[in-house]
Image (cartoon, rainbow, N blue to C red; front, top):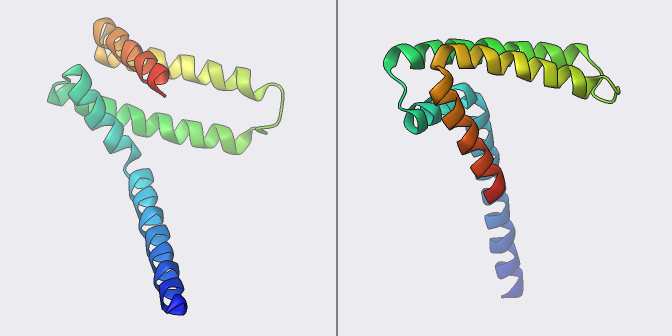
Length: 116
């Protein structure tokens, strides 16, 4: 009887791990879409803003991927260069969604950080 319980437990563990891995993969593949929808909901973006934000986030994701590929994460300059890139990207986003919505987004981010 103990053997059966162990086999069932092991099967459930494997199944749970597989499901979690698929969820992470799905979430990672839809990161830009997820962020656009979240911003749209939180900030009340119109369709034009949503399209602009989506293309901007896709461009920024490619920039960030290229940046991390070209730069050594262990270097002392990495953090400062990354902050510069983020500052530039925030400026681009601010230009697309406007100052008021950008400030609201920053406030929501700060609130989420406090909760976590």
